[in-house]
Structures are given as C-alpha cells and as structure tokens.
Length: 272
Image (tube, rainbow, N blue to C red; front, side, top):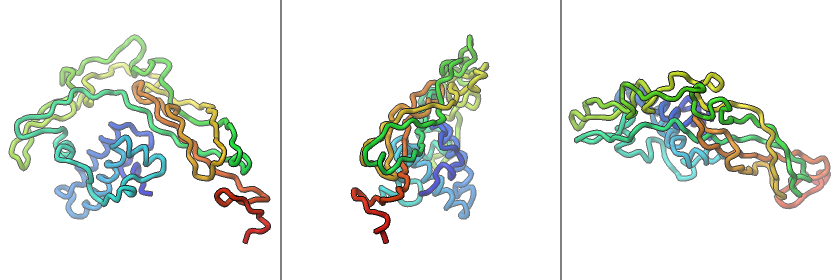
C-alpha cells in the first residue's frame, strides 16, 4: 500500500493543518508550470496523498490498512478537487472574480490521531477470547496548561497584523485577470492570535506523551489481522482536541500441535 505520509513528508500523527501545509508547499514546487514535465508524476502522487490524508474519513480508513483510492478505483491525479481547492493551493485561499472568500480564523484545536498497536494471542485465546493488558504510548492533555498551549497565567494575544481575522488579502494575477485573494496571515498562521508565552511542559502543543496500560477485551473467534477499535482511547488532540481512536491488531501465535484454517483446526503432524 502506498505510503501517503511519506509522499507528503509528514509523520503519521501529523495534524490536519500540518498535512495541508505540506501539501500546499509540495504542490507549488511540483506543479508542471513550475517544475516542468519531469515534476508531473510526483505532482500526481502528492495530490493523491492529500486526497486521502486531507479527508478525515479517508484517512481513518487508510490508518486501518485500507487504501480508499484503491477501493474506489481512483486513478492518479488530483481526484475530487474542485476549482476552489486548486485556487487555494496556488493563491492561498478561496476566491472569485469579484472578491475573496472570508472563512474566519482557524481553530488551533485538532482531533488526535488514531493509534495502531499489535498484540499476540495464543490459539486458545483466539478461540475463546481473553482480556489483555497492553502498554502503549499516547498523548494526553497537558496537565500544566490544560490544553490552552499557553504558560500558566497567560492567554493568546490578538494578532496585530490581521486584527484577529486570521487572514490577509492580496491581489494576484490569474487566468481571470487580477483577483483579490485571501491568504492565511503569515504572522499568526491563520489562527487570529499568537501565543507569546507557550507552555514549556508541552512546547505549546497542549498535550504531552506518556505510557498507558490499556485493558482490551479480545472477543472469541479472532484471527491474525483482526483489528479491534477502541473509540476515543487514542492520542489527545492538539490544543485540547478530542482523542482519536486506538486500534488493536491481533497476531495469533503458532501452536505446537494444531494449525488453524479458518474455523477448523488440523493436527500439525497431518499437515502437508
């Protein structure tokens, strides 16, 4: 399966804004008008990766091991992108010939990423079910700033450049002539405010990482590759965002005497 995170050059726990930022940067660099014909295939790969990772539902499918593009029969290229998406990539914001699209400041709060861990079970445990305690590293809401991202006693400051709107306007030349576009404010990153004193315990992210012990009820009848979803048990989001999901992938340990084939068992001495 294609490594879409690698294509965009982001980590698997990257936030929505980090993925969008990486896509925009690569799309500008690799567009055929800039990079020429040699950048066309790479541009298509980047567009395909963003098609999946830029959509919360498709990203969740991908993180569970299913490529939604392959499942839907999508071909290479920027499938599913409209005029506004293309305009936003190259001009920094949605716009039309008579003005710009004002969307307001972006929220720092982002949903936490989904986490996938594997655990091994015996043949007996796979058949009859078992409760398993597993160790996993997860992000928690910062206990010092409680998700605000600010040092105790401080708060975000309204951005002086955009006056809290999160965007700035500029005139750009396009096929339509001169067009007024809206771009994220370069000072605040589109948030409408700046954090002048970030929390030192979480580096201004609003979350910290620690090891957790999670109790998992593994039902009877599982087999290698089965994934158990634990909703809201994954990483806490940036700036106090809701937690993602935790997925437990089952691996069945080989048995000395028996071999499992679907719902039947065969003595290994009889296997050929």
